[in-house]
Image 1 (cartoon, rainbow, N blue to C red):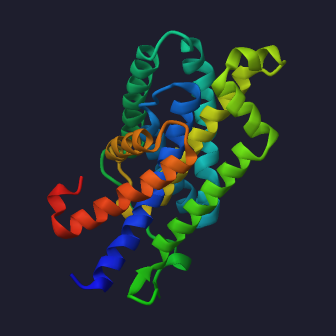
Image 2 (cartoon, rainbow, N blue to C red):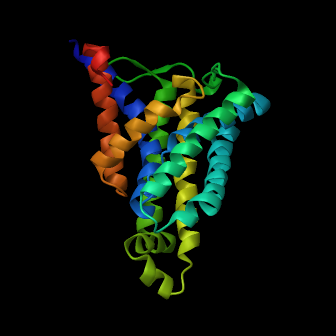
Length: 265
């Protein structure tokens, strides 16, 4: 195998893994800090892509779509946590599993009713079209953009959770919610915010993946499985673990698809 081809596949895996990292970070936060296995995470990812399609089609601004998708999905996640998830805290894992599993089906069917069963196209923004030479070949500019966005998000989350008062409260609430409540902190608001941020990341990942994977009502199903794999391998609630595991899974799938596509997944 030529070294240029191998390096190109590695970079492709890093780019695809970057989307997976963003998706898994949100899932890891919700599962690791709230102990809620969110099986609707893939549906939030899918709806984020559709929100991006609508905003991009109406405004022709990819930047606005990048802002709108996580914002809308984050607010939707907050509404879901407040109305559906919150009453189930302390009742065991079976209840949120069944709830989010059913919620995912409802969200998928709602999208099918509004947009139809056929997929939609999402063209790569003109400013991010083309390729850039990396020394071993030309690499698509949009995929390089995905890597940069992933790095920025990981750095921002690390700073927010490890270096700010809000991050300290979130980590304290995840470790011991009772003591955190005794200190005068409304732990319910903390959990609601964590769930909102987690779903917002899923919505952003869906938008970023749209030009590569297309937009269909079922697009969240396979990526949900991959995100759970990354979350388990990286460790629940671990930003560094989810980041390393996501990139590793992306690279492994990319290299394997070069050798034997049927075995990649």
